[in-house]
Image (tube, rainbow, N blue to C red):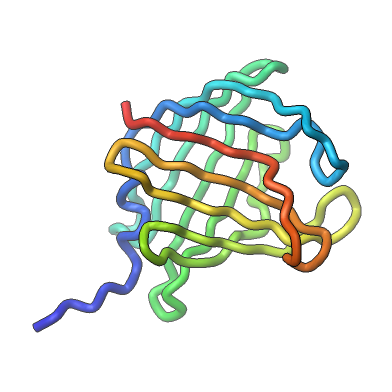
Length: 158
């Protein structure tokens, strides 16, 4: 009998400890080409019996050490993930990015407030091997017709 793949294991590749090289656009949705580059460390573990995972990201940015955390939850009925981000500045969960994986690539979308207006945001997860992956964030002011990639993180397993 074939076992139905429902997606709850899509993020299993990320469980563990990672080193990361990150690039973040200094000014978003302003036509900037100036990037801040920094190192980070990510630790990810499963929660809720595998129906989710939680991570903490420690970033060594120009302004000092910053922390962020992500809670990812899998909705079995919708067969989609919701990705909630929180940082050490605001201390609140952001609007979730919602989506799924296909062929080793995850796409997740949200509509969220940014500098007093609503925009679309997108996360892309690309899995290259058991020891390398990439996360990208992009924003769109035009309903997803065009995207500005503003944060790229390359991960290598420790």
